[in-house]
Amino acid sequence: MRQLLTRTSARSGDRARLPLAALAAAASAAVTVVGLVVPTLALVVVAALDPAGGLSVGADLALAGRLWLLAHGAALQLSSGTVALAPLLLTAAVAWGSSSAARAVVARRDVVDPRGVGTVVGTVVGVHAVLTVLLALVLDAPDAAVRWPSTVLGALVLPGVAAGWGAARESGAAGDLVDRFPGPGRAVARGVLAGLLTLVGLALAVVAVALAADVGGAAALATSLGGAGAGAVGLVGLSALLLPNAAAAVLGLAAGPGFTVGAGTLVSTAGVTLGAVPAVPLLAALPDTQAVPLLAFVSQALPVLAGLVAGTATARRLTDADGGVVTAALWGVVTGVGVGVGAGLLALVGGGGLGDAGLADIGAPAIATGLSTAAQAGLAAAVAAAVSRWRR
Image 1 (cartoon, rainbow, N blue to C red):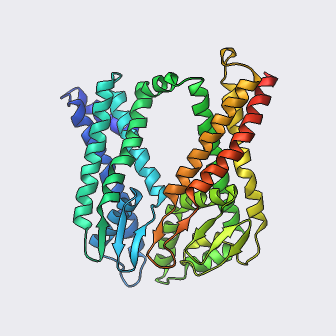
Image 2: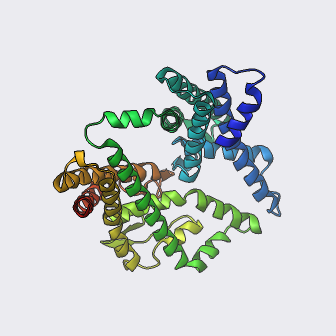
Image 3: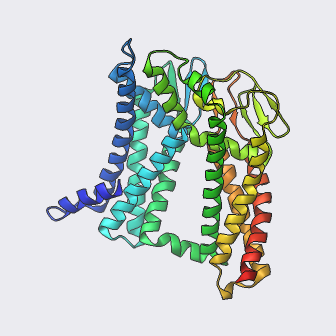
C-alpha cells in the first residue's frame, strides 16, 4: 500500500504538487475504497460457487460494507438481536491501511514539523470517518439498524490511532515522545512490543494445534451449510476473519479466567462447559468433552514466556546510565505490566456478542485477563531483565 501510494504521488508530483491535505485525503479515500472492493470481490467469487446463484452484487457489497462497519467496532441491530463482534483480521487490515497511508504521505513530503504531521493525521482520520459514516447511512435499514454511538466512535478511534502511529513513526515524533518519558522509554516500549508479539504468536499457535487435533470436525462444520463449495469457502473465510478473535480468547485461557462462547460454553482450566455454538470451522478447536484438555494447561505458560521475552528485550537495550540489576528488574516489572495492559485490550476488542440470546457474550473477560497477565508477565520480565543485566 505504501509503495503504491508513494509511486502514485511521485508521478504526479512533478506536474502539479497537490496540497498536503489533498494528498492525505486521497490516500485515506484509497484505503476505504480498497477495503470495500476486496471483500466484495471475495463475496462475488463465493457466490459464483453457489449452484443457486447466491447473493446479488449489490447484496455482496452491502454485506462487505457491514463487515467494514463491524471491523470498526460498530454494532448492528438485527431481528435476532445486537451483533457486536469485530472481525479482527479485517480490523488489523484497516489499521494497517490507515497507518500506511499516513506514513506514505509523510515520507513523500518529508514532513517533520508537528503542524504538518497533525494535518496529515487529521485529514486521514477525517476523510476515513466521513466515508465510514456515509456508508453507515446508506446501509442503515430496519432489518439491520446501525448503532450510531459505537459506529462514530470506532470510525474516529481506529484510524486515529493507526494514522497517528504511522505518521509519528515516519516523522520521528514517536521516538521524541517516548524519550520524554522518565527512564529508558525506548527500551520499555520495545520490550512491551516484543512481549505482545510473542504472546499473540503463541496464542495463534495454540489455536492451530487445537484445530489440527480435530481436522475432521472442522471439515464437517465447513460443509454444514451445503451449497456446493460456496458454503465451505464462506465459512472458512469467516473463520479466517475471526482467527485473531480466537487468539484473544486464548489469552483469557492462558491468564486463568478462561473464555466463553455464549452462555452455554465456558473453557478454562477450572472446567469445561459445552453448549450449542455456531457451525463455524474455527470452533472445532473447542474441546469435545467436559474434561479440561492438556493444551489448556500448557497454555498457562504463555504469559510467563511473553514476560521472559519482554524482560530480556528491555534489558538488552538498557545502557550503563540506566542502573544495575535491581533497576533492570524494576523496569522489567513495568514492561510486564505493559504486556498485561495490551493483553487486556486485545481481549476487550476481540470479544462481543452475536444477538441477545445465548451468544450475547463471547470472548475473555478483559480486566481479569489483563490483571492476571500483568502479574505473571511482570514477575517473569523482572527475573529475565535482572538475569540479562547481570550477565552483561
